[in-house]
Image (tube, rainbow, N blue to C red):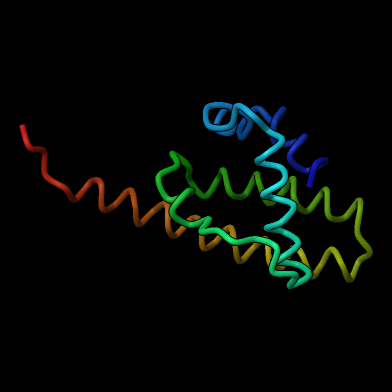
Length: 116
């Protein structure tokens, strides 16, 4: 996770989005390690709700595709083929879920009439 988020931080597409929101990376990385441990290994280490935290982000499917590209690259480099396939499948589901949540949040925001 540290290598993956290291790539995210310097990525010209994703880096600025993360930089606007994360100033102290160590606590964020600890959460991400716990999250992916729970997702990939069913450890139960993560206790949180990622969807609400991501729902309001100014992102499109293009951002999620870039995130997945970096994820695939990293997983392929550090995991066995079977391990990479396992975690990539979960990452793809998470990306779709977060994308749907962000799109839903944008639609709700657009549907609310102005109070001016």
